Image (cartoon, rainbow, N blue to C red; front, side, top):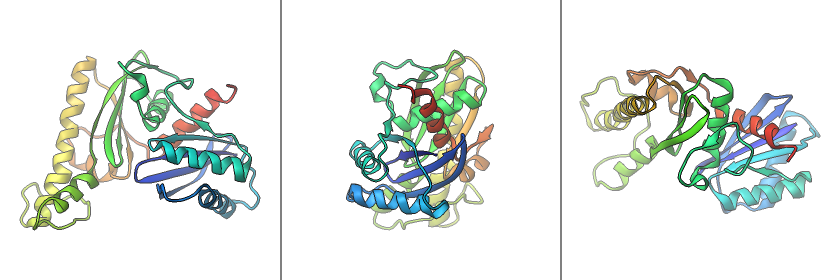
Length: 256
């Protein structure tokens, strides 16, 4: 079995693959205060909940929190005797990174782009709705040409309630109308519909620069909230895109 771990700023997504099939995935908090023993025991318990004494033989990790990546790597060595592969821009990739400074690209974005290259028609724009909303763009010649990073929905909602005295915390959901009839609906319109309009506009600009229409792929928790409010709908919504990309990249790099 292959364990894939995607460590984000807020959550860590963990998947278990057997023969390239995703058996199950879990979502846990990304917590720098947890020790390698705590994460090691957590992983053991999660895996044993699926299959007692399941044999995990390998692991690949993507992380945007480097210290936490090292914690997971140490836990896997201690509890599973596995030397986990840490994904980076130096890994063997199915595309060329056409950026001024390739080391700036996050490992999660590398995984998303790899899965998109494998699964979808190029050029492709991957939109990941996480803590940040990110765009990753691969052109028709398999060049990762760049992307967009913008505050995600939760950041926007939390900012409104944190930096104003009268605006409350809100649950992220799509409002029925653009014109808010009360404070909550007005906030949700700005957050959700405003974000959707931004994405529509940025897709249009990206396609103008690419010189052609692109395949639009969405991943992340708020895909279902945003795309019904957009003019340009996603061609594909794939909630497991990052994990699928990690599995693919492990197989590209395992001999190394």
